[in-house]
Image (cartoon, rainbow, N blue to C red; front, side, top):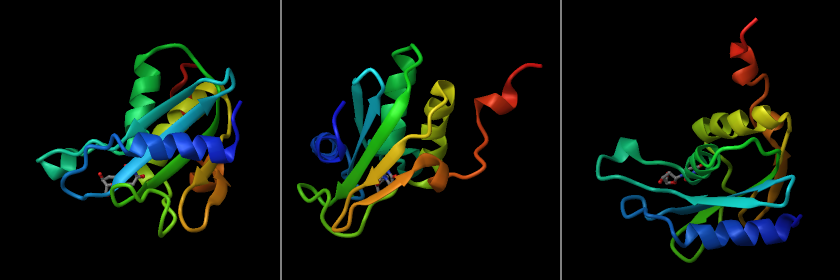
Length: 142
Ligand code: THU
């Protein structure tokens, strides 16, 4: 298992692969699981702006489409101008991304720590970012 700074470094590396020609804001996310595996994502924008995908959403899509339940233990998110991820205002996951991350977390029954990069690195948890979350358990068959 790697710690905060190493996971943030992987998120920053992922941000260099962002496809963000419209906002020019390059975001990277790194999701670490209990088995030590890490899945990263970067934002993928579209000429039809509203279709753009956030870095965390891309990472969650990779995890769930690769199959298998994995316990999500930590998340790092970073963003900024190209080559400047982690500089400036702290980047926290947007509302939709919190919900996307919650899907993976609930499947594994974890409440991951979330490190948000910036001039000030904020450490929080998914449950603090998304209290009283709606998730897979709500739809479980009786
Ligand atoms: N973005 C992310 O990738 N994750 C977030 O949590 C916030 C926003 C992306 C979406 C868009 O491509 C760019 O950052 C500017 O909003």
